[in-house]
Image 1 (cartoon, helix red, strand yellow):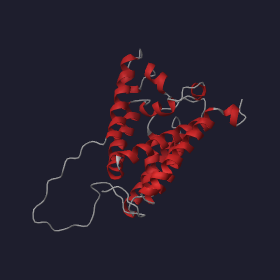
Image 2 (cartoon, rainbow, N blue to C red; image 1 turned 120 degrees about the vertical axis):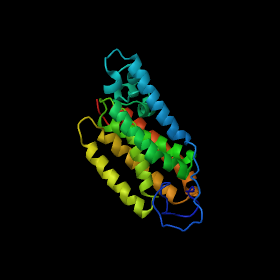
Image 3 (cartoon, rainbow, N blue to C red; image 1 turned 90 degrees about the vertical axis):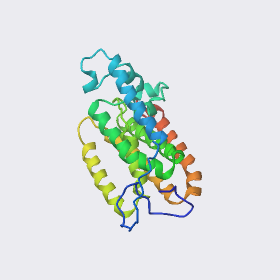
Image 4 (cartoon, one colour; image 1 turned 180 degrees about the horizontal axis):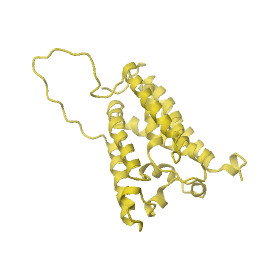
Length: 246
């Protein structure tokens, strides 16, 4: 895999995807790739904060069912607190999860989907996309569920899926569409933030389009898209000022 060049492309696929067989005289052992830093930070940070919150929580069985301890209280996205100026919650909520199943599912997708994407487009581009989609997910959660605490990396992950949708090969795009359909069903379940999922996905699409149009376009478009995302978060966090909501 290689990073997008200056020409439009429709050929990205994750490492290890099936391709045409080629005769070889002697098989080459696979090269062990280092863990990409952004996804590694999400994995390590999420697991560490989950364990820390379970350790600090007075509730029994917090490790299995999820804690609502001091880490959760400090990091979860909650509209009234963001409105008071605690804007770090729009990003810190990515690293906090509501239970062991929630954590395990999200981290498995970070490993299987996020890491190949980060290796394919480069950590710099991947970091910008992750910031934009995480903030986009938080913006939609604030717009539609202002008074509901929201946690988890799934909104950002859906943003990765939105970006990949526009740069993947046709074969891989079919698999991605099937996965997105599954997530759509999950998003309708009680207790799942459909708004965060939708926000992350929608903010990932223009990032993917910029990637597809080449590195020159992405360098110019990404900061603008990120600035728009920040503005939407600010508007969503102040409903009485911008939307006339008391």
